[in-house]
Image (cartoon, rainbow, N blue to C red; front, top):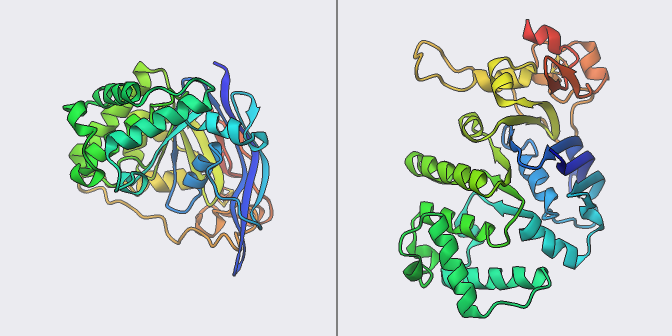
Length: 330
Ligand code: SF4
């Protein structure tokens, strides 16, 4: 499979009142066309900012310091002009966000918003803009594809008239308007109750398979990642600490942080098994710990962990950034 997304040495730091926050620190990640990749880690570890960087959706105010590079389908996203970015967003990368109400405009009907998006994608592709009636038909087809009942009537309704699950399906339909190659779903079910969560996850899995999409799924929920993704990337404090096939990584994690994440999940089948939280907190990224950023919370930390940042290296069929990965397995 050819590489669709290549992130190399990507760093991001923001200057604020309190100093410079080192949000991402040397991310290396290659995603092949057709892969399903889950990115997991605690809140604040940099998952979302990494995902948004792929479509250059991160605000880069003065004082923002990026480094390294991101290429999509061989093209440098930081070298793209406005026209190139318009094509990238929609035709290359589409995003589904956590809270659809934030991304749907409350004062316009669903149909009006979808028609505008479809016509904007036509313009970005250099095609003649479809007439509004034709764009409305295309919008109804997409609502039907995400299993929303009575799409014709739904187009005339407003976001506040729909349930959370329906709004999320509308957002998924809008993400498909530009026929993207990479679908980035950032915590797409966090705001939904569990039964609706399962329906939306099943829908995403079906759409990814039917449309041969590449999927990057961001979540702090290992169950969600395990259900949809064949590969898992674990992030901690702006770095990738483990990257491998989901079945390999869940069965035998090699990074102490991945082991901690799995141990923190309650096992309802074994009530006697108590979930164990990882001690401590995500570090302050204004002054990240030197060496391995996980060392203040790691029970295996030694002097080398404070002095040297561990590189990502092959251990037991996956990549791990830990000086003591072999001992962590034991
Ligand atoms: Fe722990 Fe050291 Fe491995 Fe970091 S490098 S995870 S501190 S053992």
